[in-house]
Image (cartoon, rainbow, N blue to C red; front, side, top):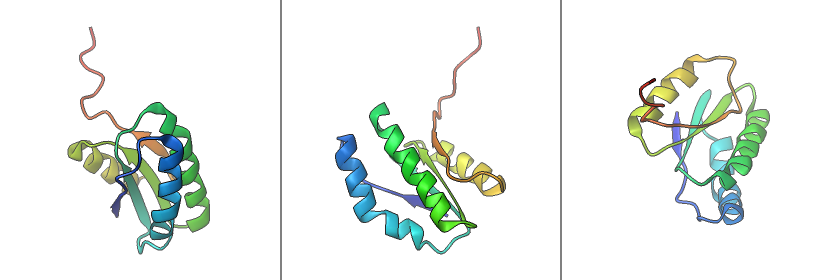
Amino acid sequence: MLVRVGPLPDDALDAASAFHASEVQRLRSADADVITCVFPPAPHDHTDWRRAAIQSLARAIAPRRINAVASDDDAAIAAAAVYLSAAEGVTGQYLPLDGAGAGKVV
């Protein structure tokens, strides 16, 4: 199950507060065994709070699984969701995606 969150404030502390106020209960009560939370791309100062939130949610909803990706690339999000749904041992991960890839190896 894909769950898109946001929009969230630009400031990392404000974004974390908004996420916890408006999204955590929705994610906890989602009726799915595997949840992929989709965050919009954000600067690096959002990484720690996002990772901590997803790790905490993973512990709270076990044995159900939750992971998160950060992207606005629908193809990359879909590919990650397929992978995560089949990766039975993976939970509590935060994965910023790069749909363009690393580029050509020189």
